[in-house]
Image 1 (cartoon, rainbow, N blue to C red):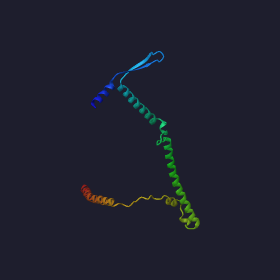
Image 2: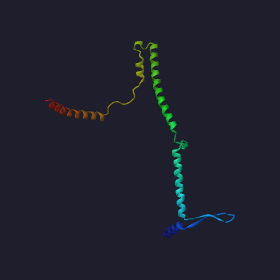
Image 3: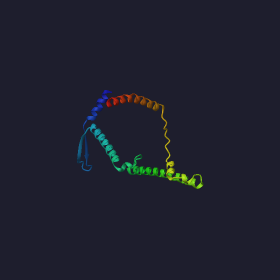
Image 4: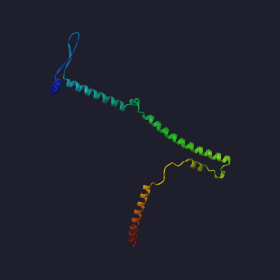
Length: 166
């Protein structure tokens, strides 16, 4: 096993000559002195260079838009603007629907005209969010602790203020 490794190492560093000849005249055009290790290193560096160049071309040019998963910056900008517009239109639609329902109540006689106010109808359209506003047990305990601390520190501050005034 050790002999095979030595033979392989020797083969890596044996110098060979690569000669390019003109086939008709057998004239030597040029030649290289190479080892197997030099060839391996050159192909490895060439492959790494090719991968890096390809990566930079894709990453820093508009070519990346053709890769699935990447979208253009213009498309993202348009999508954001459209989302904002749709939200504002949805709010305006809710306000208009509430106004129309109020007008229908007045026309049907279900609501007196004196009670009918456009601002109150618009206020009804702004529905409160469905958030749980009830305090949890942990929050109640924290509030009690803070109240106790404030009660303990407030008399001390009051005494200092009274002594300062005297």
